[in-house]
Image (tube, rainbow, N blue to C red; front, side, top):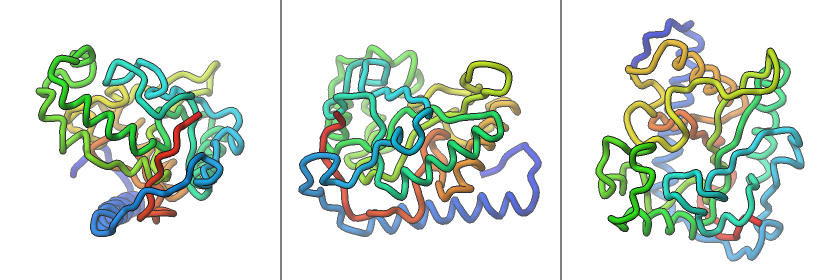
Length: 245
């Protein structure tokens, strides 16, 4: 991928290293057999509420409400909370602290996602009649084409070390979302982290978020500017299916 923004050789090497780590990690995870934990609740699963480590972190947990691509609350998301495995939660709290010291902050859209929530996404994609959010989130893609490329049968979110988030500017008043070029869960090329058609300002904002996350070990998924996974993953062979409550 190329970018029109000039960067130092060191930062370019760092991004390349993280991208290779993400791709290698993804390939490694794909080669492993992922099993669903028998844990019955978040405590048994060892999941940590991010607000216990970063009490002021902003949350807009989309799948716990109707403001998401399905147009309804997603099963398994009974409360607007962000749970992660402890290493990922600790690293994310460190990113938030780093950014707050610079006058910025994070807003979280999705963290741990129960495995049956992912199955609900697949069922939604197979329903040709429900297209209430097409104009907002997949205007240029026919719904059946979302399967595979955008909506997978399994998700790294269920392994509890992946987060979807954006960047806030808190320097001159109340924290406000920065212009990233698309909304969260926009399905299309403009959501690619290095999309050529976004503005230079939007590109800088995406790079700022990516660099802040990379400092604490999170690698970006290049198809989605908002999507980051802690590397190495704490539990690459274990998915969880406990509800978020």
